[in-house]
Amino acid sequence: MSRGLAVGDVDGDGALDLLVTGVAGPTRLYRNVVPGRGHWLMVRALEKSGRDAIGAVVRVEAARLQERIVQPGSSYLCSNDPRVHFGLGRERRFRSLRVVWPDGKEEVFPGGDADRVVTVRQGLGREVGK
Image 1 (tube, helix red, strand yellow):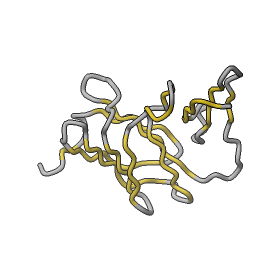
Image 2 (tube, helix red, strand yellow):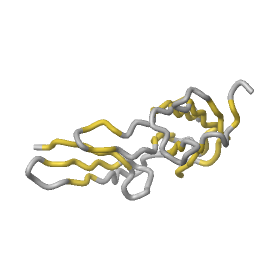
Image 3 (tube, helix red, strand yellow):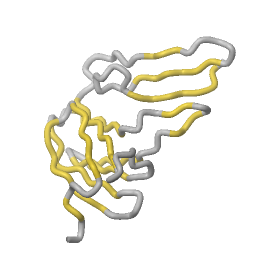
């Protein structure tokens, strides 16, 4: 019987792995080793203080627009990877990143190559509406 689930890229290959906690049993790590998964992007959003921007909304524009909320808490006594993961399929690049920070301010960051982790920090993007 299992109790908690944590999701994150444990081995740094861009694929989300699963860590399952057991009740009176072992914790199990399920690595995602599926071949040919396609391109990906992970985004770590940091507030000015350097803390993870819990509650921020991150949008990535590539072939289509995708949106994720920075919300690592989701299961019993577990925390997911605070970085948000985007599957890009065949797209080798993304056009832009847009972040709505927890305080409501919105910034745009330039696009770039896929298959990597991008860290964005509040105050270093171009403010929307200015």
